Image (cartoon, rainbow, N blue to C red; front, side):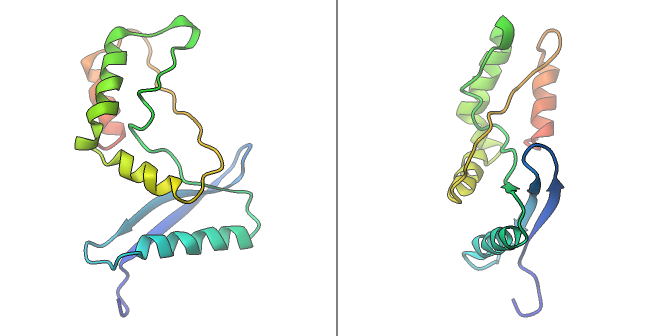
Length: 138
């Protein structure tokens, strides 16, 4: 608005088997006009494409896909599974993950990589609290 920014997007390099850029952080002011984030993302997508980057990664969306848990190597915990199902079912109350995932998907994602949840030893209440802290839900 005028000379005052109303939104931003930051990108960081994304090395690895799918090198390009990672859509790190985006925010808008509460009074930003509708569509400001879409305009920013279109600009980012065009610039990344024009620069020849192979990939634009929209990154992790905490608490999405937890209901599709996969026990690796026969591992698993009934307590951890219950906690993850609760986060999947009710996590929106503490973190707007479904809306963020829907926003990211509308850009026509080529690939969605499942997230894995792992822990060492017994799963404890403190582990659930730390998981929420990592996702900034609390």
